[in-house]
Length: 277
Image (cartoon, rainbow, N blue to C red; front, side):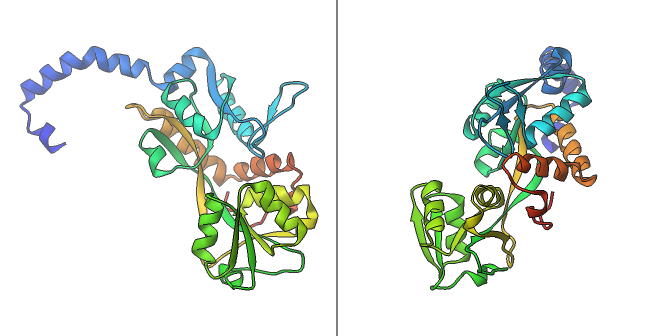
């Protein structure tokens, strides 16, 4: 900025005149204007990723937490939704390639932030533990003991969290989430460390697995956000950031979240009150 201010006014004017066509083209090519002009909002949808996405195979209808959000944005802009089936990783690539306008349920990692923009935090996705029946724990210290057997899926964020905050526990790293749940169901471990949604949906499917608790001291969470294509004009990103804050503030975001979890069999009363959404 200081270097630009040092340029003579004549040179600056000449530069502005020569770049006007390109600037006009860039302005016309921004996502918000394109969505409004085409009357279509293209979003990535991820089959089977409850509570965010659920597809009725008979009707082809999509539902879930992210679909509730997308429907509200589309209604506000008076546009229709176009669904592009993808995955978490491919959503980032699809944004870069201009195949979609919005990606949901994305964790804003530093690596991703190098190539796309994020719109703020939809909610901090907390970590905690599935506890066998009869076991109580409120803090990480409560499970950070050699006699406590913990199962996690190898190479996951769940394993990283367990090894950082419960290093003294007996930790078993298994190949898949299914193997982790089998260990818990068979009683070979006392605890499964995982993120809130994974824990709640697993217990909804099999209540015999025990209970889920968000552990404190410290509070551990990874933000869940929405991603957009990186572009010079930030109106699309900024609009969505305000939309997120507004709907969190009035409690609408939590209502959509609980409704999405309901599709996975999670009851509203089973969603911890301390979830900050």
